Length: 277
Length: 309
Image (cartoon, rainbow over all chains, first blue to last red; front, top):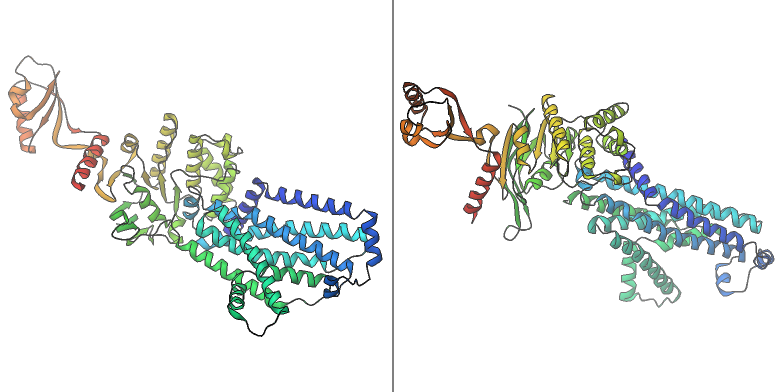
């Protein structure tokens, strides 16, 4: 436990030195302040007020059977989700590669610490940092918007859990790419790339559900395989949105995501254990 | 005899058998407890690869070894080791004290022992005044010192040092040498990898020379630097015959009463002494002739290179 804690502490110190913590906090503050001013605008407030309980005839909102206020909460949550995941990946990708730099890794591997503990310690450190940042960001946004519109969405704080689940799986892929390539840039590209692919896959699956031709076709099978191989980042976001409007969340993507996170981390540990420096 | 470190036919190949690099070609070494053992060799000889094999940073292709009674690479084996790598890089955002605390914890040192060891090791390497300065501001020499402190933080039984005096000024080098000798006197085993032959010669109990992944010689510094059957002979001033006329071919060089002489056997040596005395020549000293480790190193590496070609 002493060694595990030492690795986590060092991840925190590194994040502080790289201004990751301050940077995330600063950007979160800016977004919260901008949101605060947007919601001080009379036009915005009256629109929220008038239509708060009104179900619009707008196509998208009607499809979701939600109020304008719900759509607003979901929009904010989605912005937070994408922002937090992208910034989180960008800020924490270097935690693994910095550890594997020439001159640093020799020293670490000479210590009586199993290799898997370094990966797990760094991963846990990054996840705790992300949790603190996301908690501040989500709760800050929640308080500002709720005070402005005069209504408190009790499902909104649960976004923290969904964002963290999304981050956990996406970051596990970043860790694997970092271990295999030792390249910070490649790890970041992989993280963003997977996020983008997850978005395309979600669109593809959504499209095939709407236009159900009865036959799957090769594209359908490929989409299915990729869906189960890559983290379900978009499904996590959809679950988050459902939670906000009080709909039931889907458990399959959550368990699938957790399974994939464990699988990617296991692969990272196995690759790291076999790697020579 | 139980050894602090042994390897048996350690082989390390990078790549496939036909086209790969054979970094180690069957290295067998035994280092006893409480000795300073130095591994020498030109760049690319395989010294660092050997150390990395010992620590499990790279994995041997074949062969085996034990450190403090545990197989190479095992966590248990690493518990008793302190290691200072060549070109080490500490997290630049840490202070000297934080470096020691971090690596101390990774070595399993708990409080209050850790605080005590930090004080002791900072004192040993003379870095107490710089403990709260970030390592990014350290000079190369200071980096080496804090690196040495880091290697000693867990009070290891075996200390493996890769070029410990690299970038250190002469005064600092002397201090590091003294630290190493002090460690040996405390019963620690020191495995040293250095290219500064004069330093190695001064402090090492045993030396091995490595070339192209093979050990080409091993022995005590005395054994290696002694020139077989050659002696330095100093005699008092005399008016009689020259040494050459008395000892004939045995004299290799003669200059101002000091000569280099060579004898096939001890019997011949004693006969020569008798002969000198019978001519009234007084012997001031007669000592086995030594060459420097550097001369031996260059000679051996040269011959190995010729043999390899």
